[in-house]
Length: 322
Image (cartoon, rainbow, N blue to C red):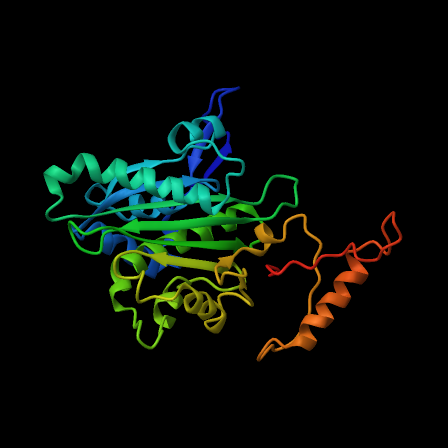
């Protein structure tokens, strides 16, 4: 819940009062989001935890706001301080990363499922939602992005499945980014718990599933530029490459990036502090001419003309270039 700070006429001098902003407007604007959160709260099948770092606890807030959260939320946490976060999820070099999200999902899922397995494991699908994001900072023009994911059981007692994705938040201020993040997170939880069994893996029809992530949002507010699914029902049947390309097909992003192993990667991570040589083309197929063009370009832009011995063979073009 967003808060506003002020002083009313009945306040004593020097006393700061806090007034909560009514959530009714948000529920009126995002009726489908509220309906999704309530439907999950009223379904006794699902029980899990929420861990959110950065941009508030906007996803869990929706489940609390619509009512009935006691039937769904076992735990809600936000470990903002890096040292405190490390005590839960282990130390890391960077905090808004896929590796951090993986650690959060693993920790929170086990923290929820293991203690409760004996009492309700036969009838409950346990889940964990986690996100680690960086929103618009005060007086700073920073990159606004994050990793979100869900780890969940599709049926009681089964091994869990997992979905992780990367988003860019495009709203101009932190409050609007938090609002969009909350709606997107509810859409993500609902899609995983309620729509994942309907994926038409034979024809790679991921459209309805992916479009549901953007309900009541637009590509002007949220861009999804990487996605990955795994689990007992996905590892063999779902191609993460096709799933990532479907992001482009469905208009959730303009392009996706793959490494030389065919794995989806984030441009900001893969190309961070790297010099880039870009070649346009359809590459159907990638020919020797294309390869020669890259070699010539690399020798011009990345290599010294001569080394100390007067040789000009100081340039090495890596075979694992993206």
